[in-house]
Image 1: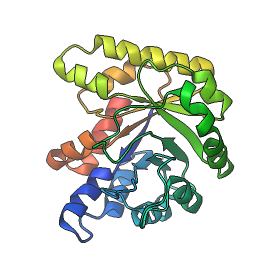
Image 2 (image 1 turned 180 degrees about the vertical axis):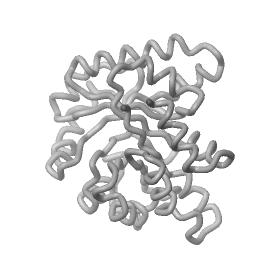
Image 3 (image 1 turned 90 degrees about the vertical axis):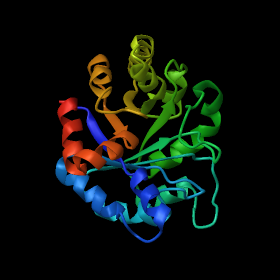
Length: 247
Protein backbone atom coordinates (compact mmCIF):
# COMPACT_ATOMS: atom_id res chain seq x y z
CA UNK A 1 0.00 0.00 0.00
CA UNK A 2 1.12 3.56 -0.65
CA UNK A 3 2.56 5.01 2.56
CA UNK A 4 0.75 8.01 4.06
CA UNK A 5 3.10 10.57 5.58
CA UNK A 6 1.24 13.31 7.45
CA UNK A 7 2.75 16.78 7.16
CA UNK A 8 2.39 18.61 10.49
CA UNK A 9 3.45 22.09 9.43
CA UNK A 10 -0.07 23.48 9.80
CA UNK A 11 -0.18 22.37 13.44
CA UNK A 12 2.92 24.48 14.01
CA UNK A 13 1.41 27.44 12.11
CA UNK A 14 -1.61 27.42 14.42
CA UNK A 15 0.61 27.20 17.50
CA UNK A 16 2.88 29.99 16.31
CA UNK A 17 -0.05 32.31 15.57
CA UNK A 18 -0.83 32.44 19.30
CA UNK A 19 2.50 31.68 20.92
CA UNK A 20 3.01 29.09 23.60
CA UNK A 21 2.94 25.36 22.98
CA UNK A 22 -0.64 24.57 21.90
CA UNK A 23 -1.59 22.78 19.78
CA UNK A 24 1.26 20.43 20.58
CA UNK A 25 2.97 19.01 17.52
CA UNK A 26 4.18 15.86 19.29
CA UNK A 27 0.65 15.05 20.48
CA UNK A 28 -0.59 15.53 16.90
CA UNK A 29 2.12 13.18 15.61
CA UNK A 30 1.24 10.54 18.21
CA UNK A 31 -2.44 10.79 17.25
CA UNK A 32 -1.61 10.25 13.57
CA UNK A 33 0.63 7.30 14.36
CA UNK A 34 -2.02 5.65 16.53
CA UNK A 35 -4.50 6.11 13.67
CA UNK A 36 -2.16 4.13 11.39
CA UNK A 37 -0.12 6.57 9.30
CA UNK A 38 3.22 5.27 8.08
CA UNK A 39 5.19 8.47 8.34
CA UNK A 40 5.43 12.04 9.58
CA UNK A 41 6.66 14.92 7.42
CA UNK A 42 7.93 18.34 8.48
CA UNK A 43 9.36 21.19 6.43
CA UNK A 44 11.56 23.46 8.57
CA UNK A 45 12.50 26.78 7.00
CA UNK A 46 15.07 29.45 7.86
CA UNK A 47 12.28 31.96 8.62
CA UNK A 48 10.77 29.43 11.09
CA UNK A 49 7.26 30.39 10.05
CA UNK A 50 5.97 26.96 11.05
CA UNK A 51 8.03 23.95 12.19
CA UNK A 52 11.09 24.96 14.19
CA UNK A 53 14.39 23.15 14.83
CA UNK A 54 13.30 22.10 18.33
CA UNK A 55 10.17 20.52 16.79
CA UNK A 56 12.36 18.56 14.39
CA UNK A 57 14.42 17.25 17.30
CA UNK A 58 11.51 16.36 19.58
CA UNK A 59 9.71 14.55 16.77
CA UNK A 60 12.83 12.54 15.98
CA UNK A 61 12.83 11.14 19.50
CA UNK A 62 9.10 10.38 19.34
CA UNK A 63 9.15 8.70 15.91
CA UNK A 64 12.29 6.63 16.19
CA UNK A 65 11.47 2.98 15.65
CA UNK A 66 7.78 3.69 15.06
CA UNK A 67 7.20 5.31 11.65
CA UNK A 68 9.28 6.94 8.92
CA UNK A 69 10.48 10.50 9.44
CA UNK A 70 10.58 12.67 6.32
CA UNK A 71 12.20 16.09 6.52
CA UNK A 72 11.69 18.48 3.61
CA UNK A 73 13.67 21.61 2.89
CA UNK A 74 16.02 23.64 0.77
CA UNK A 75 19.56 22.26 1.13
CA UNK A 76 21.05 25.53 -0.13
CA UNK A 77 19.44 27.74 2.54
CA UNK A 78 22.19 28.40 5.07
CA UNK A 79 22.04 28.80 8.84
CA UNK A 80 20.03 31.72 10.21
CA UNK A 81 19.47 32.45 13.87
CA UNK A 82 18.25 29.27 15.57
CA UNK A 83 17.95 27.50 12.22
CA UNK A 84 21.16 25.53 11.66
CA UNK A 85 20.44 24.58 8.04
CA UNK A 86 18.74 21.50 6.61
CA UNK A 87 21.85 19.38 6.30
CA UNK A 88 22.93 20.17 9.87
CA UNK A 89 19.49 19.19 11.18
CA UNK A 90 19.73 15.91 9.30
CA UNK A 91 23.11 15.24 10.89
CA UNK A 92 21.41 15.65 14.28
CA UNK A 93 18.27 13.56 13.79
CA UNK A 94 19.06 11.12 10.92
CA UNK A 95 15.58 11.00 9.30
CA UNK A 96 14.59 8.03 7.18
CA UNK A 97 14.03 10.31 4.19
CA UNK A 98 15.07 13.81 3.18
CA UNK A 99 13.06 15.50 0.46
CA UNK A 100 15.02 18.33 -1.13
CA UNK A 101 12.85 21.27 -2.24
CA UNK A 102 14.01 24.50 -3.96
CA UNK A 103 11.83 26.87 -1.93
CA UNK A 104 12.65 30.40 -0.80
CA UNK A 105 11.45 32.86 1.82
CA UNK A 106 9.24 34.57 -0.75
CA UNK A 107 7.13 31.46 -1.32
CA UNK A 108 4.09 30.91 0.87
CA UNK A 109 4.40 27.22 0.03
CA UNK A 110 6.49 25.06 -2.29
CA UNK A 111 5.42 25.78 -5.87
CA UNK A 112 8.03 24.24 -8.16
CA UNK A 113 10.62 21.51 -8.31
CA UNK A 114 14.27 21.16 -9.25
CA UNK A 115 15.56 21.26 -12.81
CA UNK A 116 17.43 17.96 -12.70
CA UNK A 117 19.62 18.78 -15.68
CA UNK A 118 20.77 22.16 -14.35
CA UNK A 119 20.79 21.40 -10.62
CA UNK A 120 22.39 17.94 -10.53
CA UNK A 121 25.98 19.15 -10.26
CA UNK A 122 25.44 21.31 -7.17
CA UNK A 123 23.12 18.74 -5.59
CA UNK A 124 25.60 15.88 -5.95
CA UNK A 125 27.76 16.53 -2.82
CA UNK A 126 24.69 17.20 -0.66
CA UNK A 127 23.00 14.01 -1.81
CA UNK A 128 26.19 12.09 -1.05
CA UNK A 129 26.40 13.62 2.43
CA UNK A 130 22.79 12.69 3.21
CA UNK A 131 23.27 9.17 1.88
CA UNK A 132 26.31 8.83 4.19
CA UNK A 133 23.98 9.60 7.11
CA UNK A 134 21.74 6.72 6.05
CA UNK A 135 18.97 8.98 4.71
CA UNK A 136 16.95 8.10 1.62
CA UNK A 137 17.03 11.13 -0.69
CA UNK A 138 14.05 12.35 -2.71
CA UNK A 139 13.88 15.37 -5.00
CA UNK A 140 10.80 17.55 -5.48
CA UNK A 141 10.10 17.80 -9.23
CA UNK A 142 7.48 19.35 -11.47
CA UNK A 143 5.04 17.20 -13.44
CA UNK A 144 6.61 16.84 -16.85
CA UNK A 145 10.17 17.04 -15.51
CA UNK A 146 12.95 15.27 -17.32
CA UNK A 147 16.56 14.32 -16.71
CA UNK A 148 15.86 11.48 -14.31
CA UNK A 149 19.07 9.77 -15.36
CA UNK A 150 20.93 12.73 -13.79
CA UNK A 151 19.10 12.17 -10.51
CA UNK A 152 20.09 8.50 -10.52
CA UNK A 153 23.68 9.40 -11.37
CA UNK A 154 24.05 11.63 -8.29
CA UNK A 155 22.58 9.03 -5.93
CA UNK A 156 18.97 10.18 -5.61
CA UNK A 157 16.57 7.31 -4.81
CA UNK A 158 13.15 8.91 -5.21
CA UNK A 159 11.32 11.85 -6.66
CA UNK A 160 8.25 13.59 -5.27
CA UNK A 161 5.92 14.85 -7.98
CA UNK A 162 4.52 18.31 -7.28
CA UNK A 163 0.76 17.69 -7.49
CA UNK A 164 -0.43 21.28 -7.02
CA UNK A 165 -1.39 21.77 -10.70
CA UNK A 166 -3.24 18.43 -10.69
CA UNK A 167 -5.19 19.38 -7.57
CA UNK A 168 -6.10 22.77 -9.01
CA UNK A 169 -7.30 21.21 -12.26
CA UNK A 170 -9.27 18.59 -10.32
CA UNK A 171 -11.05 21.30 -8.36
CA UNK A 172 -11.94 23.01 -11.63
CA UNK A 173 -13.48 19.78 -12.94
CA UNK A 174 -11.00 18.82 -15.67
CA UNK A 175 -7.91 17.09 -14.36
CA UNK A 176 -7.30 14.74 -17.28
CA UNK A 177 -4.33 16.58 -18.78
CA UNK A 178 -2.58 17.22 -15.46
CA UNK A 179 -3.22 13.67 -14.31
CA UNK A 180 -1.72 12.30 -17.52
CA UNK A 181 1.34 14.49 -16.98
CA UNK A 182 1.81 13.11 -13.45
CA UNK A 183 1.36 9.55 -14.70
CA UNK A 184 3.90 10.02 -17.49
CA UNK A 185 6.39 11.62 -15.08
CA UNK A 186 6.02 8.71 -12.67
CA UNK A 187 6.45 6.17 -15.46
CA UNK A 188 9.64 7.75 -16.77
CA UNK A 189 11.11 8.13 -13.27
CA UNK A 190 10.38 4.49 -12.47
CA UNK A 191 11.92 3.39 -15.74
CA UNK A 192 15.08 5.27 -14.74
CA UNK A 193 15.17 3.34 -11.47
CA UNK A 194 13.61 5.88 -9.10
CA UNK A 195 10.74 5.28 -6.71
CA UNK A 196 7.93 7.83 -6.87
CA UNK A 197 6.30 9.91 -4.13
CA UNK A 198 3.66 12.61 -4.61
CA UNK A 199 2.53 15.61 -2.64
CA UNK A 200 0.99 19.06 -2.48
CA UNK A 201 -2.70 19.93 -2.24
CA UNK A 202 -3.75 16.29 -2.22
CA UNK A 203 -7.07 15.77 -0.44
CA UNK A 204 -9.70 13.13 0.19
CA UNK A 205 -11.46 14.36 -2.95
CA UNK A 206 -8.57 13.99 -5.41
CA UNK A 207 -6.24 11.39 -3.87
CA UNK A 208 -8.06 8.26 -5.03
CA UNK A 209 -7.92 9.25 -8.69
CA UNK A 210 -4.19 9.94 -8.52
CA UNK A 211 -3.44 6.78 -6.57
CA UNK A 212 -5.35 4.60 -9.03
CA UNK A 213 -3.54 6.13 -12.00
CA UNK A 214 0.05 5.66 -10.78
CA UNK A 215 1.06 2.01 -10.27
CA UNK A 216 3.66 1.56 -7.56
CA UNK A 217 3.18 4.99 -5.97
CA UNK A 218 5.46 4.69 -2.93
CA UNK A 219 4.32 7.55 -0.70
CA UNK A 220 2.05 10.56 -0.46
CA UNK A 221 2.82 13.49 1.84
CA UNK A 222 -0.34 15.35 2.85
CA UNK A 223 -0.71 18.24 5.25
CA UNK A 224 -2.77 21.30 4.40
CA UNK A 225 -5.96 19.54 3.30
CA UNK A 226 -5.67 16.80 5.91
CA UNK A 227 -5.35 19.24 8.81
CA UNK A 228 -8.18 21.36 7.40
CA UNK A 229 -10.47 18.34 7.07
CA UNK A 230 -9.51 17.27 10.59
CA UNK A 231 -11.14 20.43 11.96
CA UNK A 232 -14.49 18.88 11.03
CA UNK A 233 -13.82 15.15 11.22
CA UNK A 234 -11.17 14.85 13.93
CA UNK A 235 -7.49 14.13 13.29
CA UNK A 236 -7.54 10.36 13.88
CA UNK A 237 -10.69 9.87 11.79
CA UNK A 238 -9.24 11.92 8.96
CA UNK A 239 -6.01 9.90 8.91
CA UNK A 240 -8.06 6.70 8.80
CA UNK A 241 -10.13 8.10 5.91
CA UNK A 242 -6.95 8.71 3.90
CA UNK A 243 -5.66 5.24 4.66
CA UNK A 244 -8.92 3.77 3.40
CA UNK A 245 -8.54 5.69 0.14
CA UNK A 246 -5.00 4.38 -0.27
CA UNK A 247 -6.20 0.82 0.24
